[in-house]
Image (cartoon, rainbow, N blue to C red; front, side, top):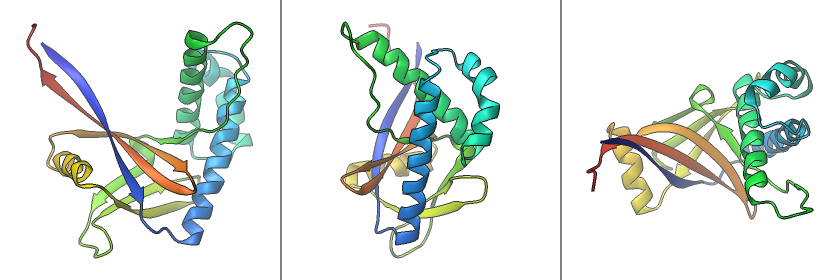
Length: 181
């Protein structure tokens, strides 16, 4: 039987310059506002949110269309998760969020750069792209190398900020054969 599996490999953004950090912070703030805006519709239907909010989101928020769509998906996931785990009289309060980049708005490549061979290029809004050096631990680097060899497929990248540092969470997927046992 074939089964799809996925893993997440985390890399750290290595010594980004001030302008790149500023661009990421501005995008995170705008993305956070957008996710909260989609949550305010109180709908777990992606098609409802798309029909009733996508056009206005393009006007109100300075993000590229792929990020607007991933923010919508993230809002739906947050609402569904909250509904499944909420206690009586609970109120959803969103404190932080990570930025999800799908294949349309990121490129990840291996170079001969001395600083680090791994570079992540992100499309942040309609006019801005940044390239970030990424460093990995030994086990994470092995998985990334497997993906470059075609053993895994790159799916999405979640950019998360923790304690003032930026991390790239690469979601890798592949189909494997598993026994019925």
